[in-house]
Length: 399
Ligand SMILES: *Cc1c(COP(=O)(O)O)cnc(C)c1O
Image (cartoon, rainbow, N blue to C red):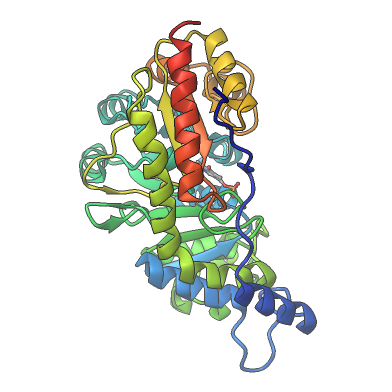
């Protein structure tokens, strides 16, 4: 019997919509790429994007910046994190999250996750009490939204200000409320592997006008904040304009231009991602050795990647699992490696953090696999991919 194989690329995203390409050419021909370089009566694409994204997200304000990581860093500073402040964050997240805490000289304290890959809210309550922390940088890692109602009630009781890292939850919801609408602010990324693709880019949203004024000055608005698309009124800038440092993290019109039509397509793309996720998931759920995290009823997910565990595997067999799936064309990442590989670093390799242990998280990551689901894959492709993984898992029983 010939084995099923797959030959698609796990890193190939879809083309930029033709409307975005045409608009980008116009920006290039105009020469006005800088967001504050506008002709009389013109609204810069960066400002148009801020307006459109604020409306889509249901936020009062939106600021376009150069990356998701910069959005987080600026949000932490604008919220008021001071040198040495404890910032609680998920022990399972991506390197820009602890990196942003380090950049503002905060002290990251890691909170465990549970088997569904969401933050362990009991551990959060315990660590908030033990440290007296005032800040939570909540990372919805790989798109898994925790019980936001319970999280916010624990955060409120503990006096924690919440900043949400929504790099993987742009468009997701909890109990009907958009991910990113619960905390003081939310940070999004438009880097190539997220839900909209401008190569690099970030969006910061909030309903708090003074916070947003500080963030806007930090983004490098010089004194041109009145040209922004979804910005608080000038009266909120009275002190921010002289007190906040310019960190020069502006988004340019070229990237904003290619994001605008992608925003229009986002709801449809979310539907397409979820179709693909469900196709892989259906195969994985039939495989005895494989555990796929349950998705709670209250969560409206965006299935742009899928995670699963094969709990009986040792580290050596996890490596074998990745290589056998890889030999059949299925590119898996494994989060259990001691050394960072691509985006799969664990907190143990962030050596700049104070030593600490999140044993439950390490136990989970030890047998956790991850796979991207680019929209260039068809639903049938995803079915084949799911079957291949299930076959490798079944074979692993005899290794
Ligand atoms: C991608 C990502 C970020 C930051 O995005 P960049 O735009 O690459 O800086 C933050 N958090 C998570 C979980 C991410 O995956």
